[in-house]
Image (cartoon, rainbow, N blue to C red):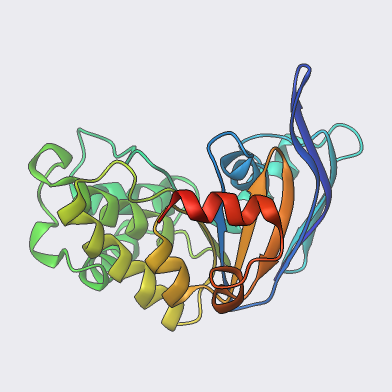
Length: 244
């Protein structure tokens, strides 16, 4: 489903991604861990081209973008539709209800008829446990509820892949579980997912593969049962020891 080949990204003299290679099979969940500044978020932002890589190639499904020169805006927009992105901050429109937030993308981007977009939004909000909150505005919702609206909004675009960038990092501890449950349900339904997170229990329980990044490199990857219990690389061991 996802193939990343020799992906490089730099901001001026700062090299953030240094030749990343990753394969993700359809229906699999890959969790990316690592210290702050290791390039995890930049990798996700390159996958949906919120950041344009300096070189390399990304393939999602049957669509491929090669970053050897200038990539057209039309190609970027078309490619971006393949992914749904859930951010650390909820980024909901404050003047729209939960229902309207989820309807907005299908109507404006996919030109979906309003009644169909509403039907889809109602289904998705029910799916994330917010049927009774559809008519409420973001300020009336808890952080966990806002993030679940964000997940529903991303799903409304019918992406082939879901990307999660620290989706629980801004939440109070007691609200983390409700968001992780929605993500676990998606995984069980076969959604292809790449998740950047510090929630190691989620990685252990849900991930098919865990990738450890540091300083723009993939240091180690493996099944959670292997990487968490017997990491091969010393840098991985150091990082995991800090989490004890």
